[in-house]
Amino acid sequence: MIEQFIQDVVQLINTLPPVSIYGVFFIIAYVENIMPPIPGDVLVAFGGYLAAEQVIGLTPILVLTTVASVMGFMSMYWIGSRWGMQIEENKKRFWLLRFIPLKYINKVRSWMQRWGMGVVLANRFLAGTRSVISLTAGLSHTRISYTIISSTISSILWNAILLGFGWVVHENWRMIGEYLSVYSQIILAGIVIFVLIRLAIYYYRKKQAV
Image (cartoon, rainbow, N blue to C red; front, side, top):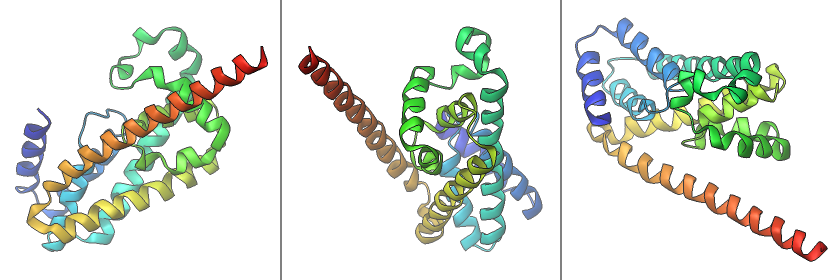
């Protein structure tokens, strides 16, 4: 299904003039922050290939995808800030939560209590948790100015890496999706291991205190 979506978007982009192509990438970069199943990263890498082919400009696509990513992040932040209590009390009423592993919200909240803006700064590199982080930042009412700055830095770095890889591997840009899949699995496995270690330490200390 994801492969078909990518293929459809690529075919659409190949029929559009440069100005419209920028618009498509902007929409993709924005929406993938709200609906995680959308393979935005792979398509951004495709943008690097198009830039190498001089179909679009590298700097404009970097700026546009970064702005869209931050806007998507802050949209989820606003949802969390505005409807935080309702979201936690009536989860089934919010259709967006179909795409978000809500069970991780408390875990992400504990990360933010420990590392603060560092979690937001790393959000683009934490595959599978981006929407949770932005939503939790809103629920936690983190300072807006710091949140925007941190998410912007994270988006610039991540998008620059994806565009750079797309530029370098050229027509083999699709292979980046395979590496991103492995990367995502490693990140999620690392998160699970970290949580298990923290739980083990917690229960060990609790047992020692008895």
